[in-house]
Length: 146
Image (cartoon, rainbow, N blue to C red; front, side):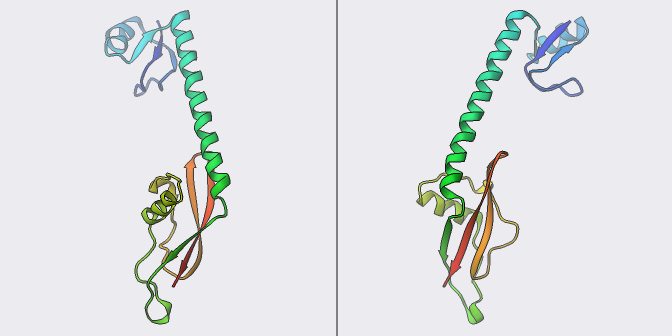
């Protein structure tokens, strides 16, 4: 029996896969537990429509992120920090602080999207990668001043 998976099923397939499984397994487990629906022309049309809607939403999201990238790429964020002897910075600049500074500028970027490889704890410029989406990554400069 052919079925279309509604959810990922371990050792069988991922969501939206079309599988050929035994009638008993399909009826007694997959369909009964809401993991799959029987394959038909109509169910295939519905699946294709849902995939198209998801792809369109993904494309719109990527376009929105690309617009943000165009505005922020190669920008400098300036942080005024306290320093001690020999220009030693007290503390570090975190992804949360960078996210809040971007929010003040009008960009809502999650702190998890900001990739800091090592602590930003010295005066000067540091490049930080921001990954808004798998397809949208860019570098922003973080400048620490006295």
